[in-house]
Image (cartoon, rainbow, N blue to C red; front, side, top):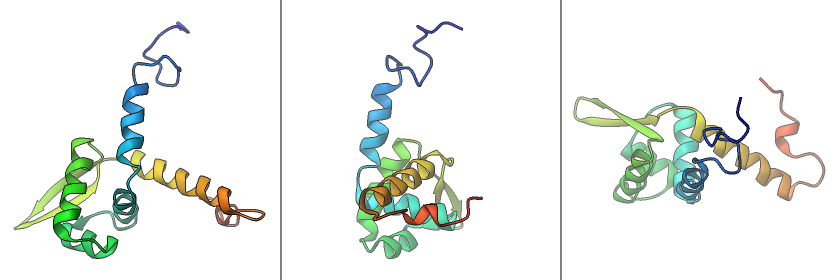
Length: 120
């Protein structure tokens, strides 16, 4: 194994570092974080259901979903005339979940809530 290989994504000189910054940029929006968390919980939702969940207009949510689709974080499925959105894979949800845990550490007095919950 070559330690200088820039294909290793975890190496500071990796060719993926710029893309990682873009991923964090896309996930740096409160509405998009709520969308990811909602899809993580529900599995699949329509635009109107997501809009209700995040308390935003359907047109605004559609714009956020378009960004998430372009980043290949969400995919769609057509059911009749309805378009349903789901996470493309678990990675965006994992990133957001880990960020939530870090946020809990930032404000916790003692152990944060995720340390009190059974892991599994």
